[in-house]
Amino acid sequence: MKNKGLVIVSTLSLIIALAAIQILPGQIPVHFGLNGEADRIGSKYEVFIFAAEIIVVSVIGILLRRKFERDSKNAADEKTASHAAGNARICVVVCTAQNAVMLGIEVIFIAIGYNGLQDLQGSSGELYCSVMCVLFGILFTVLGNILPKVRMNGLIGLRTTWSLKNEEVWARSQRMGGTLTFFGGAATIISGIVLRGFPSIIVSAIIITVIVAAAVKGSHQIYIDWEKENNNE
Image (cartoon, rainbow, N blue to C red; front, side, top):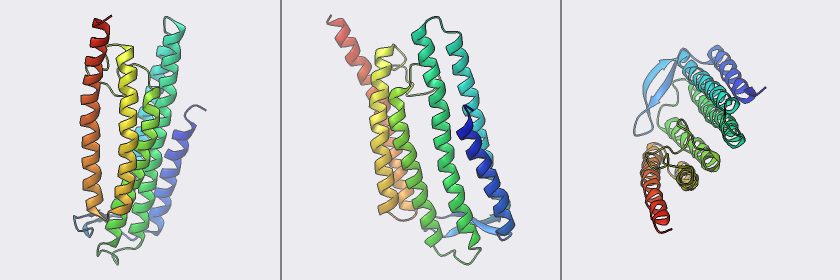
């Protein structure tokens, strides 16, 4: 079953949410402020938001896989077919990894909610923020390893005006973007471990912003370098 990972994580998320509402108090902390303390109390049924998000991502992953599989089947040559088939597999892996991270956050959210309204003085919020940073950092390191394997297409990967010029610029851009994403993920993990609470979120957001800006700029520079190389031949 090609979508086994997506189906398993989606089903597990829904089962966990269904089990959680049986043990959670009616009202739980659902949002935390800058100081790490809960600043909004909501219904325990909000745990289903995670399951819904995971299911949506799973559906997107399945649709993308089918799209690339059709492209592979209708490809004019073996190379194009192989590249499209590879992208189909990557879509499933990436969406499964993203859902696994969301499942981890769901479990932490439920664990904090299980404490009811007794622990609202910062420790729960700090834990939630730190765990989020670590989990998303792990996701970025996974994406960093996968990005160089993405073949040229118009849907996934580091897609810029310059990376889409040709396959050589595309491949170089993905390798560069993968490296930035991997080390950005490692930095995000460190921020989640070293910093406590909302500061770890702020630092992680800055890291992601820098990664995106550097990747776009890097892709442009790669294209410029490629043009120089070909003009000198």
